[in-house]
Image: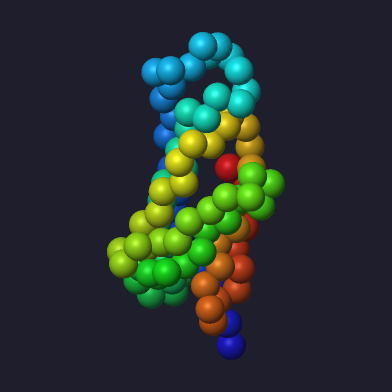
Length: 93
């Protein structure tokens, strides 16, 4: 039986100090950060894989289930979270 992944995420953004056009969609001035937890026990999942397929980027959660994906362009993207023994979870952010 596969468990379900619960996750909390935050999208943080800031103006890039070196950017020349603040309205340029490809300025890489946003980050996604959050925590991956077991949806039943609310315990953090260390080593979960967080992927943004359209951007070919991602990261792995730390020992407390926290993750950070840096240098994201402006826009909405599908984010997938995977962990062995759990159902893959995805959300658009």
